[in-house]
Each structure stands twice: as C-alpha cells, then as structure tokens.
Image (cartoon, rainbow, N blue to C red; front, side, top):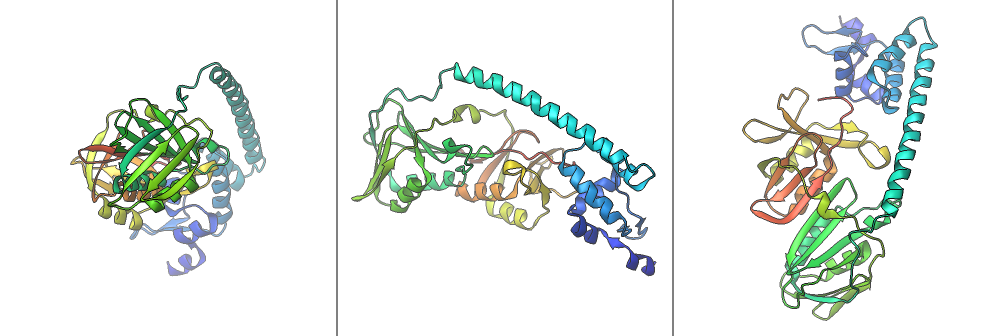
Length: 369
C-alpha cells in the first residue's frame, strides 16, 4: 500500500494545507463530513486524496462562518457532486439567517440601552472625600501581581483599562477584568481605615508605577479618592488621576454556582498545560482564534489536561494563556480549581482563603472533545 500512501496526504499534511487541526479532521471523519480516502486497518492512520485539500479548505471557511453542521455536509456534497449551485444556495440562506439574527440583536440591544439609561448606576461613589490607608508593602505588591494580568485593553471598553481599588471597612479590594477573565485580591487596610466606601479606577501606567515602589518590608500609605490616587513608600511617591469611567459591579460577577473544588499543584498543572494537547478555537477578543486547553476532572477529583479519548464527565475549556497566567498570579504552589461545568466560569482560588480569586470564562468548543 506504500504506493497509495505516496500519492495521498496524511492527516498532518492535510491539517497544514487546510488550516484545520488534526483533531478537527478526526471529528469530521467521525461525523461523516470529510471522510478520508483510505484508513490503514492496522494503524488506523487516515489518508486523503489530493482533491480533498480544496474540500477541507472549504470546510474550514464554512466552519469559521458558523454554518450548521447539517448545511456543511450538504454544501460539501454539492461541491463534490453534480449540483455545484447547492453550496452557493446554502451560503445565501445562511447569510440571510445571520442578517436576521443581527437585526434581532440590534433591536434587543437598543431596548437594553433604554433600560440602562433609566437606571441609576449602582457603583456611583457617594463621596469624593479622600481616605488614607496604611498597608503592608508586601501584601499590596502580591495583590497587584494577582490582578494585573486581567486588566483589559479593548479600545471599545475603556472602563476596563485599569485596576479598581475598592475600600470598605478594614479591607481594600483590587479588581481587574477584560471580560474574558476577572481577578480579585483583598488586603487588610490597617491604621487609618475608615468605614465609608471609596473607590477609584487606577489606570494601568499608574498601577505599574505603584508596583515598582513596593517592597516586602516597607509600609505603604495609600491616599484614595474617586478622582485621584497616590502611594507613598518611604518618601517615594507615585500619584495620578483616576479614570473617570464607572466600573461594572464585580460583586455580581463573582457570585457563582457551587462547583466541585479540586486541589491541584499549580507548577505541575502549568507544565502539563504547556506540553499537553491544544485546540485552536475562536475564543479570543473579536472572535480571534486562540489556543485552548480542555481540563477534565476524574471521579476522584483529579484535574488533568484532557485528550480526545478522555472519558471524564466534568470538563471545561479555557484559554491556555489565561489559565497559565491565573495559576502564576495565585502565587502559591497549592491552589484550588472550582469546576462548575462546561458553561460556567472556572475559578482559581487559594486553599482556606478568600483573599484571591481568578475567574476564567469558558470557551465554547466548535467541535466536542
């Protein structure tokens, strides 16, 4: 059969030529959408005819366009059969569906905007008077490190371009989110703490300037108002204006359904993520494709990086880079992953502590694992 193999493409070659991952090609083989020309009965290795390259490229484009699987099968059947007009007709029908969906979404968003405009923002600060807090430099540094990775940069959402400092009672809470992930860290506010609540949205450059001043042993004095923030560490000062945008109600975002808590060794899991299977999915900002890791939880509560043959019932797919950053930001070897299902955010917590929390939005897989 070697002469047949030499005329055909292996699954890896077709993957490179078409832009579809090998795992995706195996999925579409199982679904009867793109079946290999020949499968080695001994090894199970798939071989494709050269003519199937164009078919696979068409499949990749239809997949990116969000066409339903049933329509993709018909389009490919028309492509390779005697009805070349079938694929354009299916594309036209799909485009009309998308246009109707966009029109519906516009009407709904317009109604939502009307509702928002008639409702007072619950995060409005009642007082602009500053509050002065005395903090431990090392604790504030760790808190900034725990949230900095989640700061947003989307130009359409300037309200996420910084770290929220939220002081209430004897705690200072730091919050950052880019809407795909959210990080929260809490530090005790020692001498000088006041009962009223004061919040400020600190721009990223000022956050980094503050972090550069902090040391493990020196105390830090933080002066906080809704308009301005300053940090004094041993006479060294970082100060600037706060962002004027209102921050979303993060307290609502961190209310999650109870999930299964799994204790993991963060460095070991990070190594497994770096070397384990990766899926290429449209899970990034503006639909950009991104590397995705699928985590699976065994019946014994062990978290592992799932491969395509894994049989665990509990799974969640997340952005691989975000998960690696969240594990590092936790700052501990032992962390707790809270898994609430494939559609709920994955929580990264500290054992026996609520001082730090990272939430990662799940990525919806285009093909099931």
